[in-house]
Amino acid sequence: MPKKIRELKQLLMQAGFSELSGKGSHTNWVHSLYAGKITVSSRDEADAKRYQGKEVQVAIETVKEREQYD
Image (cartoon, rainbow, N blue to C red; front, top):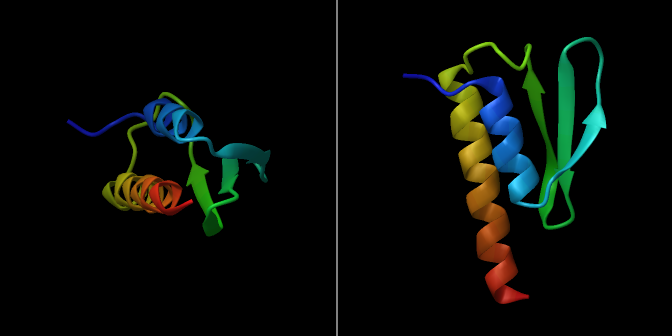
């Protein structure tokens, strides 16, 4: 069962990402230890696409790895 968009946003918040507003239903997420940004699009109650879940997972893992080295 796919995760909901709100679950992805919660995971990003817990990992220390900050939310920047975007256009329409898009939100951008940034972290000082992550190069670039993550864009999450769609309403909170919508099912997340597989690529969105993967992108969030990779971003969180990258931040956790970099936190270990700092």
